[in-house]
Amino acid sequence: MTGDDLEKLRAEIAETDRELFALLARRMELSGRIGAIKAERGEGVSVRAIEDQVLARARAASEACGVSGPAMEAIFRAIVQASVERQHAVGLERRAKGGGRVLLVGAEGGMGRWFRGLFDHAGHDVVGVDPRGGVEHASLADVPDLDRFDWILVATPLGTTAGVLDELVLRAPRRATVVEVSSIQAALAHPLARARAAGVSVIALHPMFGPGKSVHGPLTFALAVRTDEARETERVRALLAHPYARIVAMPFEHHDRMMGWLLGLAHLSGMLFASALARSGLDAAELEACASTTFARQKATALSILGEDPALYLDIQRLNPHREAVYAAVGDALAELAELVRRGDKDAFAQCLERARAAIGPAE
Image 1: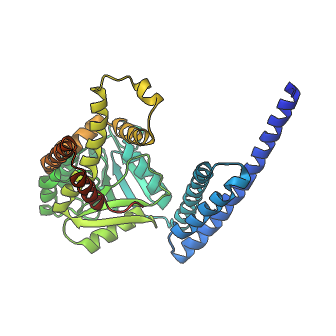
Image 2: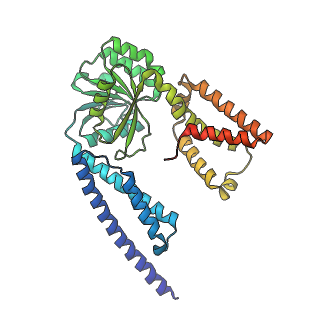
């Protein structure tokens, strides 16, 4: 084979890629049309049975295509995800109805920028407040009339949210509903009590994701109910204006206990994994060279945690009043497993793992 032959084959591959791009564009166009129909009918986007059919077709065709089954499934999982995002985008566009007015405090932070993108999709008129600049106002004091807004969303760091709420209480808006999105609620108990006494309506809404989340995908929020679940849910849905938002309501007092395990333990496990490795004396490149699938997955999870803002993750641990219960459970679990391994007790070890599986629940 000559160099010319190689170049011709590469040119054919490039042309084939262009044909694939055209087919992919056609698939996305069809997905958009399906999304529009679902939006008109008020139907959800994700249909697990249909997605499973797509993946089954891909696996069945893998051998004929000369592609391994896992590789073919990975390709079509990405295509399915892109199709879902396209349908979500169309659904949001169809549902945007000109919304309301939102004052966004902390607009230049990670979650502030995320919420601004969401509100733009929802058709809200958004005014930003952030001392870093780049938005309409540098401080709340610069905003002349808080009651011209339907909502005031507070997306500031945990350590400053209480001060923002106290400042809002002094201004005492009557028309606007204040929504704060803190990961931990216990530290806000006193400012929230002062807000209630002053007649300021505040809702505690906790997004269960970070600023990298696509606004087109399903979104889960924890609603820490303070007074009236139905009213708070209604106000939140009007603010989010997102057809696929999942709002999980729970008593305000229960929120931080849940987050101690959902966030505190999850973050802690990633930090412990990496911190233990740092004490191993092994080189990272050496570990990477022969990493198992399980190690690679846990490394990816740990890196996603370690790449976030350390101050935020410290506050999530430090400010949660239930952290000691989590730490005690981690210590007890490690001690139990270590003792069972030392004894070589197969039956007890298997029972321990079975209890652990039952606590986690079935795989998705």
